[in-house]
Image (cartoon, rainbow, N blue to C red; front, side, top):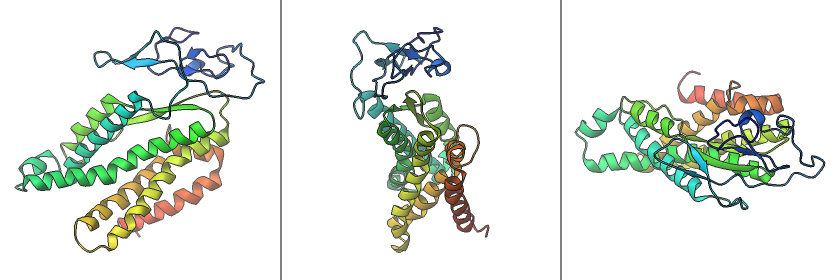
Length: 271
């Protein structure tokens, strides 16, 4: 749909929690669109403009019915989460086997291929999906509207790159709509993702002591992958979580980033 101010097409518009208008990223803040709402009132959650995704076109179009209170999970969001999870599971199963050639033609039985997909789904999948959902839940806790949206091109890139043994993983992102977000709120929303990855990694740690079977293999993948996701997202660059956390509190950022870097260096034998 189009921005109420400049007319720019937005697949997922930002909705002002004061005047209720739908705007693009450039005009989402009240001061940017000359908001006529009452900015002295306490911020309340405003549901986003209702949209529907068409597989024939790469955009969302406005629905005729009026907006309603946002649910915890919309049907579109559930669909996007499931598709992103399954696509990443397949992509990482290719990568774990060294590429598509080894996956399909490496001489292993079909049951082994299925096992790899299962391991990827329970180790890598939660790392990506719960990372994004943690952003969502913390944002909602602060009164913002937030939903996960898959990025179709990112999923295609993940599958294509996995054919040669590595994964360019960018399954989607959590879109957040609201006004007057503070540095503290933004930092804490961003910090939730890496902290979730650390928590998931710790859940896999006991499996490392389960012998040499399937459980040990799950742990040996689940721990380093989730720690890597936490460390990577904490890099203080560009749109990554680390840049927002550092702008909020550099001590909090360092207290998490430095130990993670040391643990990852130890895992890969660098120290």
